[in-house]
Image (tube, rainbow, N blue to C red; front, side, top):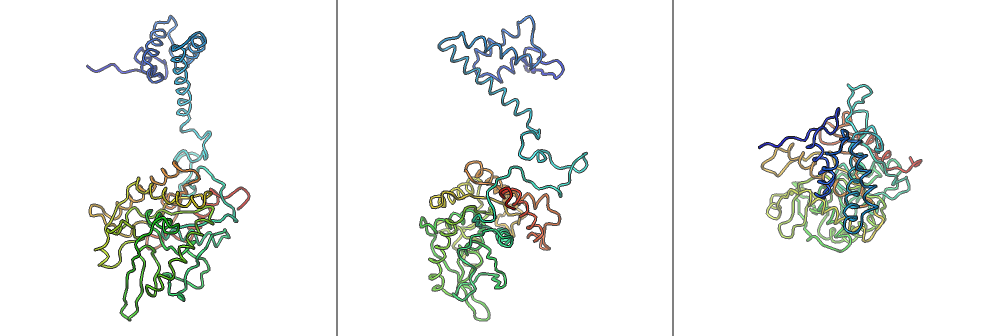
Length: 421
């Protein structure tokens, strides 16, 4: 038999006993309180017909009964009164859920709609709600991440921020070469030459190596060219090359010292999450900073698709390691809008794999912010995907300089201390 529905009406209030019973069960967990109140209210000569009338009755009930009650009865009534107050608070919050009142950005509650009276186009808004006055131009700032991250790094330097650089880009004179090194560009791409960091395990490994709490097995890849040239690359540091194993061995301790200084001297650090897919060494699970580039490397590695929980755990381990040595370390997470170049997944087109990758990393960032103090999310990804006009370079993967500039204006709006712009 199908039960009769509880009928609620905006016009006539609590129309029937089913609606009254349903609402009392919503408010109170104690069956005895539910039954008693139902019997008293449903049989009263002046039957309540509106929600407001019911609240008045319940207010009076607790005001009259609690002072006169004793022992266990009093405790039950106090517990039920607390549930009732919680219900009233929750109802008020729910009623105002889509109101701009009390919101960090009242204009950010509803999706922009230029066809609505007073509505705005997506291309005229920035997706900023709360503002966090963390920085001025003297605040030590560092960064790491994908190629989108170094756009942020160089933009911060060009605009006069105190960008921490503990290891300038190598020019090749010491047997270490940075890919794309430009002697005419005075702005390093990262605080230290850790190279591009596309995945969260690589970020955690970087801190472990720097602070001596874990050492990825050293591996060098020899690459020979038709002209007879030979270089050696480190799979943990994307975008660097060494003249030989000796140059690598001489550089490593200096590099790790620079990484330690970068993490301990930085007050605010921007980490751009890039990819959800990564490759790891089968021997010990150490993550490569990028995909394998030589055929024999596939014998040593395997691909992984990281879950939300794994990404959360990796960033939190990174954060914990750094804060052991720099307790005031603040972290700003952003998500790179640059899509996957390729996917290792056999069941996915690269476009759907990219959508999964960005979704997982975005959810992970949300959880990390919610679970950790002094961690913030910067919506550069959302700005590029929804708000920027003509955001993409001709390759339709990288973001134009103009778009990066607008993103950094949004950074100012969100994180600059008042009067510090």
